Amino acid sequence: MLSLVDINKFYDPGTVNEMCLFEDYSLDINDGEFVSIVGSNGSGKTSLLNIICGSIPLDSGRVIVNGRDVTRMPEYRRAAFIGRVYQNPAFGTCPDMTILENMSLADTKGKSFNLRRGTDRRRIGYYREQLSALGLGLEDKLDVKVGSLSGGQRQAMALLMSTMTDIDFLILDEHTAALDPKTADLIMELTDRIVRGQRLTALMVTHNLRYAVEYGDRLIMMHEGKNVIDLSGRQKADTGVDDLLSRFNAISVECGN
Image (cartoon, rainbow, N blue to C red; front, top):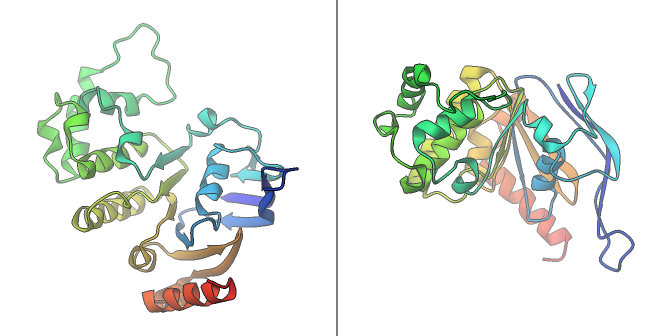
């Protein structure tokens, strides 16, 4: 279980540009939940993910993972139990390394290399099997450098690589935003299959309202660092894109836009 307890986060404190993004914000994510998070720019979506991953510090509050306080744990240590896929496909892979080398790197995350070879040839069959499941033919391109792949292929690899080790949470930061619609649909199908197959707890920030409605079992809409919608079960199932658009429009009117 993931819990954010009384989170407070200020940007540019003590200046004329001071902004309070989160004020006594709390959130519980249950094990196995696939949560879609939507909201306008500046609503706090990506900052929320950054707080969970340890990318930005808190002013006050606590981050609790499975009963353990990780508030002061650095980002690189949280990466041992948190997988993250970014909006830019280039962020999740090493372009100058081959597919095989990237897979090997992901496979050994958190392990000591010592003086052993970086690539375990005995694992190649396993890598082929994992890549084959993507349905992109990457299993036959192990010696190809990842930088020569398409954005969709790289994002599929980033998704696979982020879940190769035993993680507790999968963080998806607008991971389809840079892709064309057809490829984005493919990546979402792969995402759902991996999350369900591995029974992961996943948080997905997206601007695609259709994805937010169709995928996941919980839907949160954020505005100015608060949850203005938090739906699950039948409530989420009965919510459509038009319902979310209506709420977006209502918020826009309230803000004078």
